[in-house]
Amino acid sequence: QVQLAESGGGSVQSGGSLRLSCTISGFPHGSYCMAWFRQEPGKEREGVASIDRDGRPSYGESVKGRFTISQDNSKNTLYLQLTDVNPEDTAMYYCAADGDWSGGYSCALPRLEYWRMDYWGKGTQVTVSS
Image (cartoon, rainbow, N blue to C red; front, top):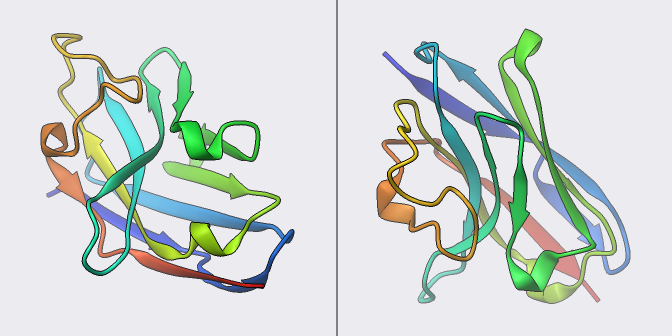
């Protein structure tokens, strides 16, 4: 059974930094596409960053140059480093994965669609104050 668990959220002031972690268990070996999404109440889910089986990252336009996605396969952990945050970054952040990605769809943002992901964590809240 695949399980994803996010951590690292919290409150931060504008211009500050935060690192989110997503611990993955039960993940099948092989090809995958993993991503971070975020969502505010009443708004659509937004792709923030993604990374594929070859380690190629991609980012949503609003976070390019500020956020960095990375992975540590030895720890089965996906990370999202947030820097130079602003109040518009306030949202619930979710880790998501497709553990059987065959390359049949793009794992890169903005083309990656959230409904392609098979597994989701419960989310971690990030709140940025001005």
